[in-house]
Image 1 (tube, rainbow, N blue to C red):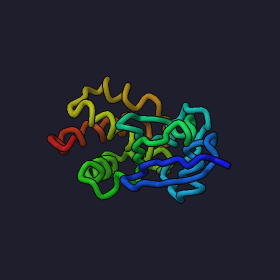
Image 2: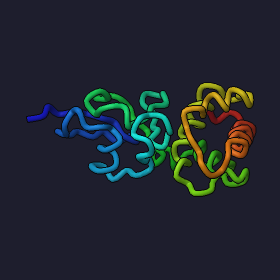
Image 3: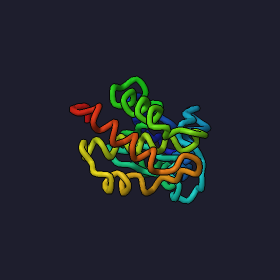
Image 4: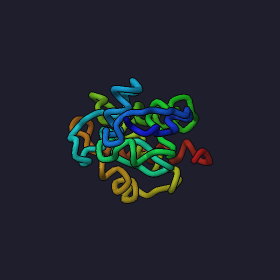
Length: 158
């Protein structure tokens, strides 16, 4: 029998007896029906599964739910409805930084973490901040421009 794990996901406390070795990505998608984080590479190289754990950017395909017990997890769904998300979403759309949308949740999560730590990043700092996220459609210039725009418009939000 599995020991109870307590998680705080998107500001909601969850208690589960799920297998401690289950990937956080699988738990979010299969057990919690939280589908923003996506399975891309499954090896932590694409960023499609990015979440925030205790204010840090983490690829959820690389961590088990047992390792995040008692930690605070935020997915793209948890950012929705915040002023920061609204600014990022609008800037991504206006800059043309969204095409197929597969990478967008992870990119917005990465941008949010970056801006939370550095509200006025340079272009180089943005490129480094999103370096763990792959985009095969849009191209990085539009994404970088979207984050620069969000930094200007969201002054004081992060």
